[in-house]
Structures are given as structure tokens and as C-alpha cells.
Image 1 (spheres, rainbow, N blue to C red):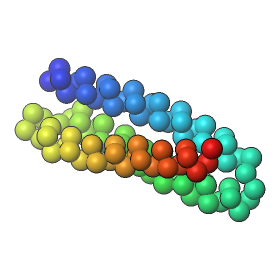
Image 2 (image 1 turned 45 degrees about the vertical axis):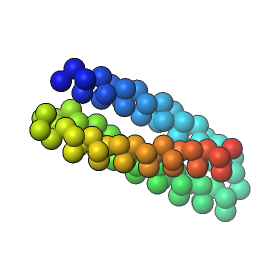
Image 3 (image 1 turned 45 degrees about the horizontal axis):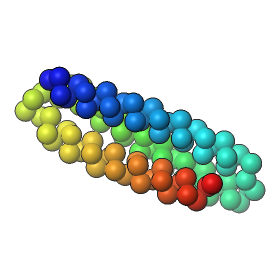
Length: 95
């Protein structure tokens, strides 16, 4: 289970970094005009939804047995890719 623990810790660290990025993006949209702010706030809400899903994946990975690890990891990887792409998109459109 050591390999799995290292994977979970690595994902948790990355998720913490992304949380900081999302907070920075939120701060940047605060200074936007109201119509742009609304659109960008929607983007941040989508990121927060993906972030919650990633947190749930980490919780599931911590509880996974050796038999269910691969299935849980595949789901986590998909969520991870979605969140990573969403942050990159938001970062390029907000900055």
C-alpha cells in the first residue's frame, strides 16, 4: 500500500496547489466588470465542482482496497485531467 499512499500524497499536494491557483483566479475576477465577472465566476464555480470531485476521489483512494485500487485510480485520473484542463483554460482566459 506504500505506492498507493505516495500517489495519494502527491495528488493531495497538487490539489492544494490548484486550490491556491483557483483562489488567485477568484481574486483577479473581483476587479473585472460585472458582465465579465459573472461569466468568469461561472468558470470558477465549475472549477470548484471539479475540485470537490477530486477531493472525493482522494477520499475514495484512501479507502480503496488492493482489488478496487485500479478502478478508483482510473476515475481519479479522469477527474484530475478535467480539473487540470479547467484550471489551464481559466488561467489563460482570466489573466
